[in-house]
Structures are given as C-alpha cells and as structure tokens.
Image (cartoon, rainbow, N blue to C red; front, side, top):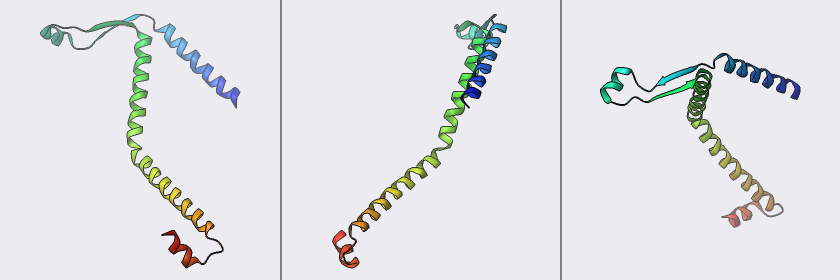
Length: 113
C-alpha cells in the first residue's frame, strides 16, 4: 500500500513540475481595472510566473473549500460534543452503580444523593 501511495505522489509531483516548466513566462497581475486605477491614482501590479499564479489559485481554492466545509460541519461537531458528554455521564453512573454492588439498591440510591 505504501508503494502505491508513493507512486501516486511521484506522479502528482511530476505533473506539477511539468506544469511549472511549461508555464514559466511572466504574467502581470493587476488588482483593479486600468480605468479605476487611473481614477484612484493607485495601480497595484505584480509580475509573477504563470505557474505560480496557477498554484496560488489552486491553493487558495483548497483553503476556501476546507474552511467552508469546516463551517458547514459545525452542527455535527456540536452534536458529537453533546453525545460525548452524555457518554461520560453514563459511564460515571455505571461506575457508581458497580460500586454499590452488595448493598441494598434503595439505600445505595439514597446514599448517592
């Protein structure tokens, strides 16, 4: 199984290297359209190789997707916390019940409260 995993990551790395080599030419990124930049008097511009722009876009998309999924699963995590508290409470109750073995049940209940 490790061999398959390593082979998969080697293929992914090879593909990323090939994309990087094929897209080395510089690309100009502008933060706003030319007319708006002229109107405001600022023109944030950066020049990067195209593969960097592609990889940053994919990485940003993955981060946004992970964050969105984390927010979406909030209800499931909250329910799991409630269930864990209930389970711990039941385990403590079972442990208390086991401690009272050999005693009268009514007296053990009264002593517990």
